[in-house]
Length: 588
Image (cartoon, rainbow, N blue to C red; front, side, top):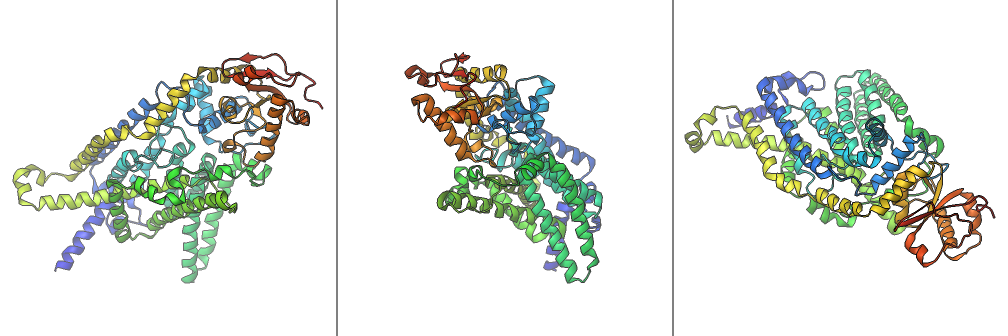
């Protein structure tokens, strides 16, 4: 008798998550259960609660970025370079290296370019202030895919974690959340969530149209960033290989052809959708990477030997709730497709995170070069998104345990008689909102917000660097090559202007171009300007068709440039002086 009661309780709890078996048709379409689980009033209540959570997060993101005009992170200067290049009509070209091609994912900077064109606002303002508006697509897509695959209650609880809890003190680029900073990883995540939903729909209803849409979605994700596209490709491969193996075991070989057709229908639209970038990476560069440094960039907690710090940074009450949700999901959700997507997402992100960390570690320590993709934190970002999904399951489970316990407690009946028979949906939404409000003071003090404000404030004080940037954009033609000194000048003010250079900082240099060769040539030319040697540097000016030289004003005050063929300065302030290179000086 006890066993029967326990089975009944477990069954009802499971149905409150995803619906009873009678609600599911073909690969268990979980969405069909939602109208039966929640009446219209409850669904509106949950939706309004989500809107309030989103509004709370938006207010903080808006406050963090409003009124500031210059990016605190050098990644944004790279994006500004590509935007400026597109505005100058040079899409498909490297904005900073003459004769080279597009190498960075174009989706975000093309959206930003369109925004600049429509609003007529400065590039730096769009890069800085558009984040709260464009990045909001991420939490909206996250909420609605969970609502679609599971139900609105799980989507609401998971969104609480996504917006406020899971990221903790980790910057927005390292953990899936709603961030005011317009990093590609923060913007592009909405496409990943849409693709997960399309993957679910394609395999739950074997309709080739959905596989075609999935291919397009993955292709567009690739235009945004390689990491989500690679996760999705591996996820689809994970599911299809499992299907093929099952068909072979069951001697249903006719299904193998169907699975291969589904793969082809996905692959062809993916190739077409990704052509705006893959044409250059494959057609021009043949994926031959010469500068591996960008793959080696990892944040401190993402370095392998800092594993303890990584655990410490991610340990929290919400993480424990997510762990409960993961265990509950593993033990109770038996729907094959949902399990394949969920655990495929989990294992792929874990594997790619540690593999990418290993690639960087072997590169830096032992000069061993394994095939690499992108820095490891990009995979950790989507692992944190899955943590928020698990939080939804864990929170719903713990909430239902608590309400059952209270309703069976006599003192609760005496003190709150009206709540005993009341719907739990209002209480559920209320607790979600209460948790967000209690945590909000901690949320708004996240280093991700404070650090950015401090860095930008320092950047805005240095007006002369900004004036140098503005002069270059207005008065130096887009195709001109500017020789500047090593270090910061190549990153700012020159890189965001979209003007050409001899060498860009290694972190932002085209990975398909030999950085060391260009850096050596740049150093020789700068040395010649400072000391008059080596004399062979004269011919290097012609090699790169150098049109302008930008030098530190402080250095010039101590010693004048050695080359007599530099013209009179066209611009000078306390930071930099810009000289034109007169005709004939680029000859030996």
